[in-house]
Image (cartoon, rainbow, N blue to C red; front, side, top):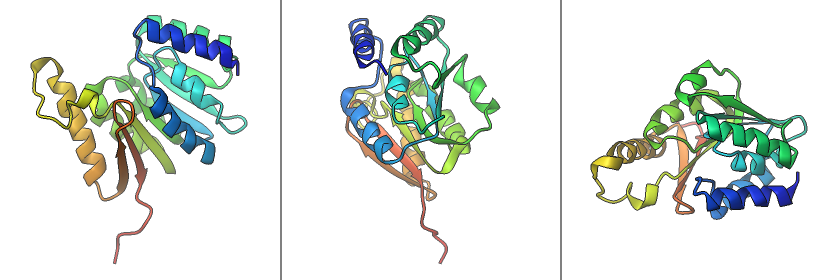
Length: 201
């Protein structure tokens, strides 16, 4: 992978205020991927392809990332970027709305990364759990959403996003079949795995 080209893509995205994964969030995920090399990753929200390119260096041989994006400009840029960095053979970009694409997928993924429309996080979670391998992991970015989610923020403009992120957190932390940790890195990162211990007495 061409690291120099990757850094140029990162700087361009930052300069153009395109939301990309923050360094401290990436560090947490990288550490996990280093220890648990995945065969298949599903990413919901490609943007310009930066996070997918970063994750691709941890894939097992023959591994693949399926990433979904609905913004046509971003899709075009992401396709160019993965070629520039030399990882086009590892990253498959699905063009379209994740709400429509996810229900059509049937494969099992070792990791799911959620970083798309905040108001759709509960739906993304239900699909991620359906598509997750038994030992897989879900990373959901921006779950604290500028601090609004844990505060009493209720302004109309962001109300739906905040409400649905709260619903996401409630589900992953209160569902007895899931084990979740929420880290205050970046804009909040929720890390969810299936509960491995049997709860039957």
